[in-house]
Image (cartoon, rainbow, N blue to C red; front, side, top):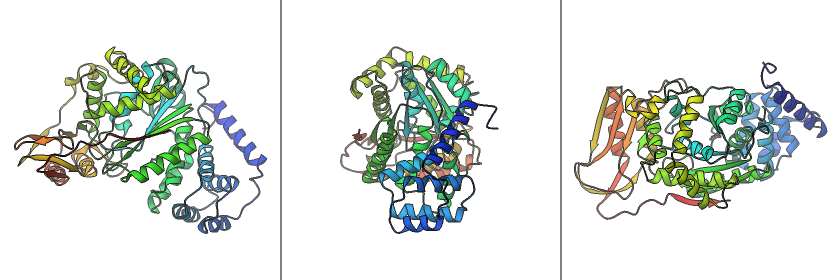
Length: 463
Ligand code: URA
């Protein structure tokens, strides 16, 4: 399997890795129980010890029950910056690092910690590529209340995301951006470790999250990375202090690998934009790329694309990067780039140039306000779950999603609502999901009689 594709990269990565192990004398047998005890007692592990543990576990030489115990020790005791970097290195070296050196220009990606209505990848990839910076993106699927970039793109008829790394390179070379799914060659250790974390209550660990995210991002062959770390009721990190700690850990690790990096901490207390659901989010992204929408989604997307253009060296500041991004939209170049990427990945672009061509859901329902008030708070997690209930998401990885399903959610925190105003529109092919979804949305909203301040979209920029 290793040899029919990307032979050079796989081969040299393995040789390089074995060389590293030999030069550091990691092949000397270590005592796994002692290493677990060391971490349990709060003593930092060395780089060699971490590389040994990850390598042996990935190759099936350390059983899951022992590695689970190590994960719990890491969860409880944390890791120093150097340990997190070593963990990332070990996970990265479990697979290949794509060599994009034959492609001219900077390669910059964005990673978002995910949220409800978060479609910024679809917007910023074409903007940044149109501005002359390569965007090699390996993305994920939606699970639980958050959507996934791959599911959104696959709602475009014909659009393929399961491309191999040769196709990945070839599309970046042709048009400067590509959006594909995880391949088995990229950080395979992450898949194994994540499955264990999932069943051992060790997901919410900053060093483990950092290793997981950064090993996959560093394998893409990037020079720079912009992190969109979300905080609020629809985010992985609900509290600002946790989002800040994760952002800092990701930045420290990226810097340990000599990558240009900055993090933007953004609000996830309400849906980003107004559309939630796979095709609905493609629809809204097209409208943004065509310059027809100016709202919170555009503000966040332009800050992220501006930061990417800045890290890619085409702007002297994020602000200048934002100005360039706006030009890419107003000139039509960003939308043309989106069409080009979609076509190269097999998408039928007639659905993008004629949005009304897309099939409609069998059932729809409007939720209207029963009394006037100001929208004070949204349990954004519940909005995401309501969209999942309609068919837009999965409860297990095996579930099949309905690309048409979802919610158009109209108000923002602070919006004055009059009796009878439409709060949300629901779309589904499952008639009996409407009642529960409607209840979930209504339960998620809190109103106030007095004026409410708008949410601050960008909480912090850390560089
Ligand atoms: N996303 C990842 O890729 N890994 C984690 O551990 C958490 C979020």
